[in-house]
Image (cartoon, rainbow, N blue to C red; front, side):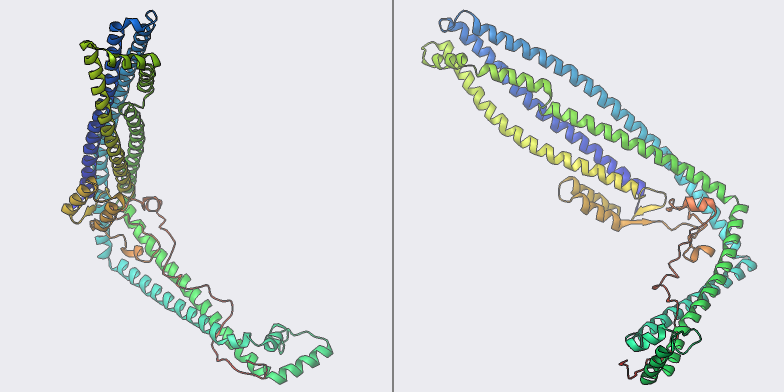
Amino acid sequence: MISGRQTLASIDQAMAAERTRLAELEQRIQAANTQGLQLQQADAEDYRALARTRIDLLTGDDLLRHIDQAEQQVMALLQAREQALQGLDERMAAAEDERARLESERMDQADEVERAAEVVDAAEASTQARLDADPDYRRQREQANEAERTALHAEEKAVQSAQEMEEKGASYRADPMFMYLWRRHYGTSAYKANPLARWLDGKVARLIGFADARANFARLNEIPERLGEHAEALKAAADAVIDALISLDTAAGEADGIPALQAELEKAQLALSAIDARIEAAEARQQELGSEKARFASGDDPHTKQALDVLAAELQRDDLMALRREALKTPFPDDDLIVERLLERDDQRRLLEVSLKSLGETLVQQRKRSSELEALRLDVKRSGYDRPGSTFKDGALITLMLGNFLNGMLDRHGLWRVLQEQQRYRPPRSDPSFGSGSFGRGSVWAGGMGDLGNLGGVLSGKPGRTSSRRRSGAGRPSGGGRGGGFRTGGGF
């Protein structure tokens, strides 16, 4: 078993190793691009030598001047590139120092959070032990449990009765003549009609046996309504008893100074969250600088691209191509040596292009893995897996899966599933469900270890009121009662 902070440290170490591999790969790509530029510069030098030996092909010294100007332009661009790269390296070093400083600050603050959480946990455990030994408190807790049990039972009966009313009343509601008389309140003091309508309604009532049916349907609606009212009354009574228990828990915590300790814990956690936000900003800045450095490594920076374009354009001039073709025809050994060097560099360039393509593909995969690892690290922190009390069951498995991820055998989502399956919170000494915390309405107890997200409600002394215990079914109908269905001449 390893702690959440140890797991986060392992991820940090993996990220550092990934950064080192990325830097080495970028250096290899940069070296290859530099070699390509050097090959072009060597070509320019050889073309200059050819031009001097074959001055009869030249019109004045135009060709030599073009080559010299191109070389001077390239040297100026490379010098500017070196200065820009040096400035970038300085900014990257400063960004890394800032991130390292923040990580060190985070470790110290995380220690502070853990200490504060342990103090809260110990204080709450002590308070709970004191309350548990108090006969008056135990009596109040038993009354709350009994009131809650009774209210739940009444609610279940009311819901069941309402469901039965829906089922057994279906035949009544399906008869249009019955429902016509029911809605007109026929047979009650609320019935209003002119003599003709009253005579016709009486005929219909006698035809379908409405008098008995109305009594049955009224009872069918009345029972759920009464049970619902009874359940609401018991719920209100249970609320009152549980509120009294909450008051006892709150008062005991306040007497033992727990709210102040919880406030210190929340303050420490908020400070840790603020550091995390600064670390995220620093890492985003590092990613921007890393992307800029990658452009230098791959030769995509503006200085290198312009230098390559200048040389490429110069070396593709028609007069240079004519010079090279003419040199192949001469019997002079110096010309042959120069042309041979040019041809060798053509072969080197082809091999270099293949190597650069392979290195570029590897760099894309390496960057993707590095980005996924950074996202995973952020997920671990956002999920609270590095909080006090967070542990992972099998440390060896975590190390193995992390290695598989770095080797490309496992993706981020697979590694995250492993972390989720392995993560547990170490049981605290205190019990968040103690006393009034067991009724599904939030808790005055923070739990100390592993549950820092509940501190807002805890510090206010007002546990949450959402109660899953009572909302087990649909809302109760306004009417309802027990009774059987019936059949009449109206087709029930």
